[in-house]
Picture 1 (tube, rainbow, N blue to C red):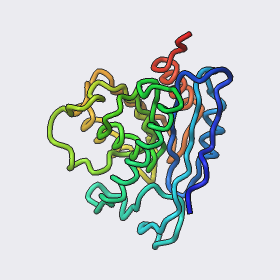
Picture 2 (picture 1 turned 180 degrees about the vertical axis):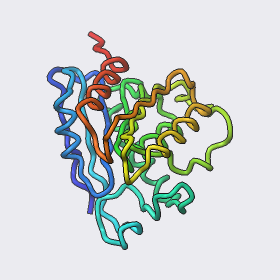
Picture 3 (picture 1 turned 135 degrees about the horizontal axis):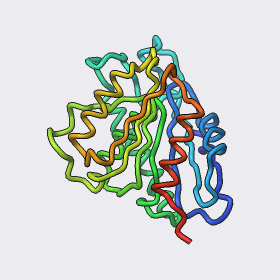
Picture 4 (picture 1 turned 120 degrees about the vertical axis):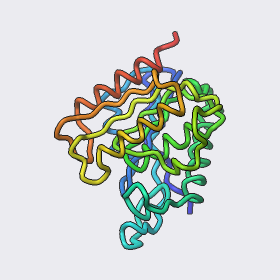
Length: 225
């Protein structure tokens, strides 16, 4: 069975840019498509795919929407390497589809929340598609030990990253966000990495954060006409 089609916020006029945004564990693309509709720009198309439903180890093997299996939430937990790599390939295929629709990859921002943010970071650092930026909310970098030490050599070595985290997150502690941003700064141009924390915010989003997301999208996907 194939996954349902993504939730899409179409551009108000001809789409010359796109944001592909990946939801968190157990969620669907609908909530984020609504959130992005609240900050939309007329020339941007917003695509919020739904993760496939699969058993998740962390939740006693109950099935739920998940981009890959999560075994544990501590930094030394075992990771679903095959699942993460396959999920990244699926995201790259989504990017290719938009390129075929006429939006060049360097006019596409990849983003996500929690598990989706983790996947967006991993995909941006491993793809051969040049992207406009990454929005990584309340997340971490998966398979971080699989990356060589030092800067990456790929097309996204200068990519702009907006990483955001609530300082009261009980699920993915803000410490994971800080460690991730330090690691990112060794891999890509550190001048292009922004880390914002939000006082009192838990494992969720906020209006302030969405305004920062909008500012980032407006900056890196300006109108072309």
